[in-house]
Image 1 (cartoon, protein in one colour):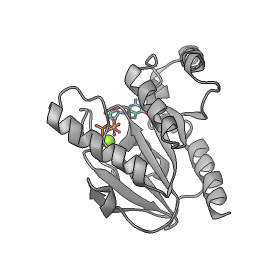
Image 2 (tube, rainbow, N blue to C red):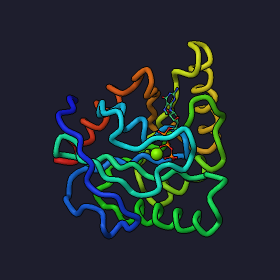
Image 3 (cartoon, helix red, strand yellow):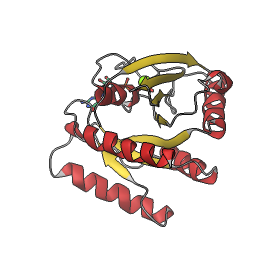
Image 4 (cartoon, rainbow, N blue to C red):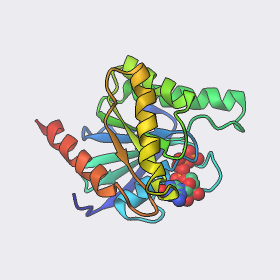
Length: 200
Ligand code: GTP
Ligand code: MG
């Protein structure tokens, strides 16, 4: 898929105020600092469409971007950021869960996990929560440029093994890097296919 346009639409913490246009939507979720905002920028080839930072906790709201005037990419705040106060965490969690529970045009949630790390409890629990709520998701491994050719497939394989202890099948997954652009075309092709299904 070719990206012809990518524009910021709106930021808010209330799902009721998200755009009402009934077009397919894809949300990026995962631990703080995993690379959600960076991957959005890499996909649409815009350096700072979504705000990124070396420090976790940069994205604080639900951010809608309209791509090719046909579909939305949504950048969400990360979970699992230790330095956020307990009450802030609750508010955060509430509007994120509201978003997933209420956003009918959400076609797929991309759950980003750092390809360098072993499966984290918080990610596994979140995926289970999505499944329990009937929300389709795919796993996106990030920062693959930080691993060498032998460690990357080894890590993916051990992630799969862990998933298969819990799940009957490995959910669909993609391996990416915002720095090297690995997997970016695959993510866009994946979205393109889902967009076509949305029309049917
Ligand atoms: P929050 O908004 O805080 O939840 O974080 P985020 O998940 O949006 O992460 P963000 O995109 O802001 O990136 C966090 C840090 O990781 C930044 O310093 C990025 O430059 C770096 N980063 C993101 N993706 C990659 C990648 O593919 N490769 C490398 N080497 N660094 C990356
Ligand atoms: Mg972010």
